[in-house]
Length: 339
Image (cartoon, rainbow, N blue to C red; front, side, top):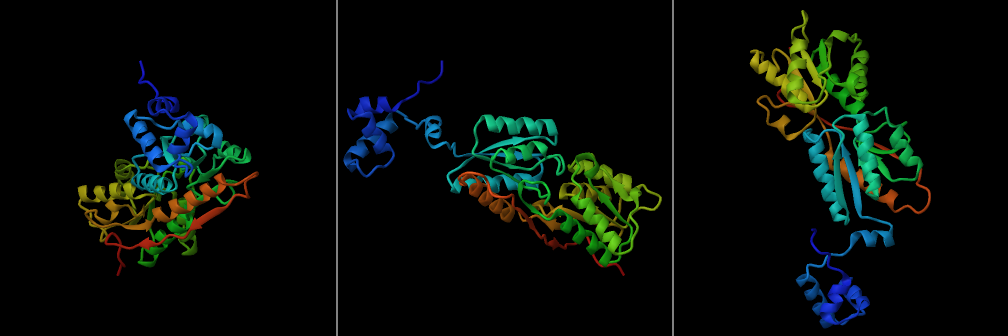
C-alpha cells in the first residue's frame, strides 16, 4: 500500500480551524493572524503535509515544470547546459524534467509526447537533427511554447544557439592562416543531418581557394572519444594524410589527440587539431586543445528567458525568434603557426 496522503482537512481537524482558514494560512495570507498561522504551519509540518501540485495546476493551468530534451547525456557540453538550464529555471520557480533521445528520432518524438502528457508548461529541445523538425513545428503551430537549442533560421521555431557554421569557419580559417592546406574533418553530419559545421568547413576552404577533398572527411558514427580515435586512424592512414584536423566536438578531438599519442606523432608539429565546444577537458588535455567556445551560460539564459516569455503570452504566440551567437575561437597549444 502507498503512504497515506495528508489533506488540508487533516490539518484542519488537527488544529480545529476551518479548511479555508488552513488554506489561507499555508498560502501566507495576511488575513490570518500570525499566531494562528504559526499553529497551522506547525501542524502541517508535524503531519508532513505537502500541497497538491496537480490540483493547483488545474486551477492555475500551469504545472511550473519544463521539459528538457537532450540528444546525449554523456556529451559534456550538453551536461553542462542541462545544469545551467536547471539552475536558471529553479531561480524562476520552475522544475525541470529531463529526457534523452540518444540521437534517435523516434525516441525524440516519444519523449516529447511524454512531456506533453505530463502537461509541462513548455520545452527546451536539442533536436537529433537540425533538418527533421516537422514534429516540433507542429507543437509551435499548436501554440505550444518550445525553444530549440540549435538554430536553423528557416525552422519556423524559436531557437537560441551558437552559430555553428561561423564557429567551424573560424576554426578552419585559423588552420589555413597558420599555413595548413590539407585539413581533415571528423564530423557526423552524414549520420545526423546537422550540416552547419560541415558548411563552415567548406566555406573556409572555398574562400582560400582550397579544393574540398572527400577523402579528408571521416564520419565517426557518433560523438565519443573512442569514435574520434578511430576516425583519426582513418584519416592518418591515407597515402597523403592531413596536416591538420578539425573535429566537430571536443570529445572527438580528444580521441584524435589520443591517436597521435599512441602512434608517436607530435601535436602540433606533425598534425594540428582543433575541437568545438571548449569543454573543461579541452583546456586540460595532455596537449591543450584549440577549440570553438560554446557560450553555455549565455545560450541557456537567453533560451530560458525566451521560453518563459512564450509561456506568459496571452493568446497566439509571437512570430518565432532565432538568436545566433557569434562564437570565439580559443587558441591553445594544439595549433601554432607553421614556418
